[in-house]
Image (cartoon, rainbow, N blue to C red; front, side, top):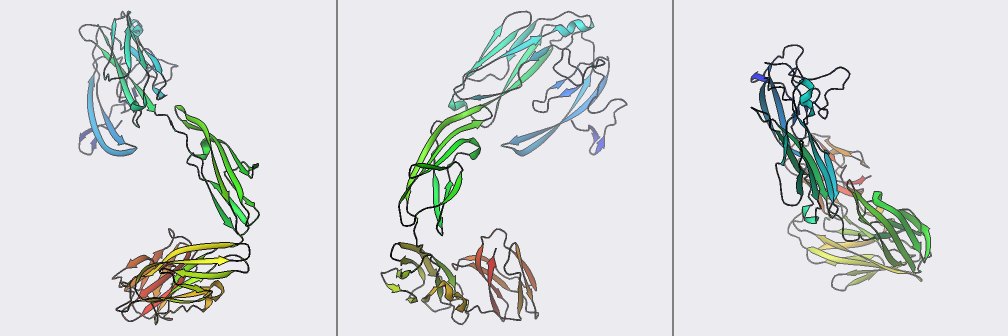
Length: 481
């Protein structure tokens, strides 16, 4: 309900005790809750904000009033439009013809394949309230569509029955709106009353959802996570088995298993996928894997050399896990290096580099892509160098900055980092790269003395920030928490 207007922006003032929520004198007996559109006759002034149906019993002749309604249209939960409608009412005597009633359930939710039955009932008993006589009623279904069967039962007050067994083809996001109309035979005006029933049809799930899990190793600990697509809230029970024995009933757990030995892992899952209409699918599934936790784990990280006097090197830092490891680096084309060393690529581009580590009980290999793009500050030179380092040698990698030019803080960084000019040299360009040399941010033509960068959406790790003025380049290694 909205305020009615005489002109744009000028609100109509109702005479006391009337208002936009009760614009007429209506039937409101003492001691009865108002409004209540389901009583016979209806009590109070009631608007159904879903169907738009206005229900009331006027009791004073010759009253005139106006009301305004705002109709909002939503599509998939998003407001797409509004329409304002104003109406005028005037009250006249129609030979004591009080509005009859149509009653039916308001909402249903039904699964595809189930059967829905409900009745639509009519009554004109209210006509006797003010000394009138009851009328015959005629019941119809206004917006009929293929599917539901509607039958009318004869009598003074007609009643109807809906029978519907919706299929998968009938399932949809939007509910079906069934509107029924009961019309009396009073003269000279035939009064019509409507009732709308909302029906939601939900499809079932016909194929069992798979149980899946992943396994990772951290040190000597094996970590297992249930990655099944079934929502955890619909899972009734979970069982993890290692080598045939139940070890956990949680969605995720960890265990210390013998290293360099195979283990059979099994996830058993039982679920009941629910909806507002009931169970969509009841079932279960099993997933199995054979794993071998290793006493060694090959790994390396990639980092650009921040030495601006030699900007054509990429460091590969060996951070493999295990004791007594020997290492072998293998490059695209078949070249290899044992232990630490250096490998030269003669052309820019992307290359695959594999690191193999081994000890008496274990061998593991890790591969990644390494490359350098000539379009970034490389001028006319071609080729780049890849120094191969162990993790304990990382501190010897130079980190060149133009001290005294810019203040870059805080470091480590959590959400925001601030860059401020200290000697009046304006910030012209900002570049941010990750540890693999991939550009995360490139902001041109800044021309400012201070800038704030947002790191909240970046993953934790090492990043390199380059700040350009017209005379200087400052490079800073940043640590994102």
